[in-house]
Structure formats: structure tokens, C-alpha cells
Length: 274
Image (cartoon, rainbow, N blue to C red; front, side, top):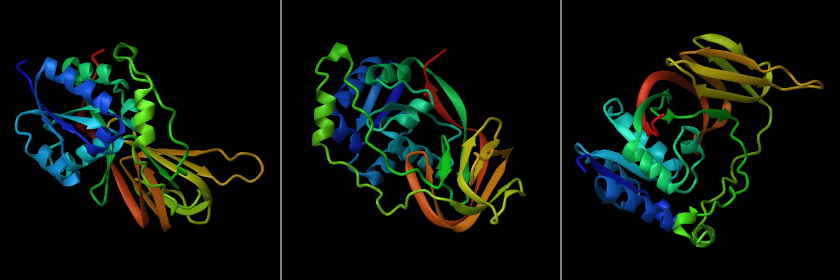
């Protein structure tokens, strides 16, 4: 019980799946000295994270809450000295892709018993961060993910489905046009990979290793499928006419120019020990 935790519960998580939130609080409070914060919105979320002191922050919430926490720590230049933990509740695809267990019990136990792993990320020229990758143009908003039952040991597998049915749904991004061919100039470390004269179907950029960004450009195919163009480098610049992009759990833009740079070992995430 010597370790002190600051458990910040995102308000969306409380609305989406209150049972998983309760389970996470019980497991964390039983295994450590946990101070629980219930912010009502982004400003209180940021205030709680900024006043954590020596407590290790634990975010209970979905992917947007995770990205918000990393962004706040990055902009305060506190990422290097902070090991962040997350118990995914709600939309958890990003967190799970990074290695965080999906269930509330398993994720909370990883917070208590896991180890910090330093991960690369991308930082753009507006001081935004990308944890797992970005795509241009953004994929259309699809169907809601299938509901997963609560762990059997806690019973009531219908609970999560009922809560999600009753909870308010986030607004659809109806203003975002369906993906189509784009004319973009993509530069990697100052070298042009594709220019405006070549229409492209999609561009993806992901953090690699050692501060290197991995880039895949899919040219517009006519007849036979075109071979993707791959490149890697420290900086990636995309130039085009009012393009949007999906980064992690959100859509940004439109912008006409954006540059991302890879940062090695920029942030620490507590994951299950091997």
C-alpha cells in the first residue's frame, strides 16, 4: 500500500459503463493508496492531472481521455518524468492496441503489478500528439463496436449493453466527407515521396522505433491495384488543399500543411509485465 495513485475517472466513462468504473476503483483502492478524482469536464480533468504531486496518474476512461492526458503532459513538458496508467472504459481500441488489457479487472491489476514501457509518439507543428497513427483522409465513422459483456465473475453481462443503450451517444461527424482521391505532397525528411500531380487514395503515418515515423502512401489505382509507396524518416510533412486526418481517437482539420516529427521514448505507459 506504499504506492500512491491519482485515479482520474473521465465523466464519459461514468456515463458509458458505471459498473466497470466501480470495479476499477475497487481493485485499485484495494491494492494501493488511491485518491479518486471525478472531474466534470476537460478543465477539471486538466486541473486534477496538474495537481497530482508525487502520485502516479491513472486514467479511467476511453481513448479520448488517454490522448487528452498525454497531450496535457506533453504541453506541460512533464511526459519524460511521468509513468501513465489507464483502465480502458468505453472506446478502447487505441489503448488495447498499445498493449493495455481490455477488461476492468485485468487493466487495474496491470496498473498495480505492471511495468513502465517507454513508447515513441509523433508531435505535430501545432503541439498535438499522435500515439498510434494517423490516416489521410479520415475513415468514415462506422458502426458502433459490438458490446462486450462484463467479466463473468461480476455477473450481469447485460449491464454494459443496457448502460450503453441508455447513455447519450457522441455526435456523428456528418460534416466529414467520405474518403476519396486526394492530391497531396508528402515529404519525408525533406525528400518528396509523392507530389501533387499524383492522386492518392490514402496516406498513413505511424510511430516506428527510435524516433522514426513510418509512412505508407497508396496511389490512386486505375485497373490493377497500385503498389503502396513506403518511406521512413524523422519528419513527415503533408501539403494539400484543406485536408482532414484522423489521429488516434479524433479527427483534425481542415489544414493545408502539417508536419509531424517522431520522438523516441517520449512517454511511459504502464503495461502488464512480461
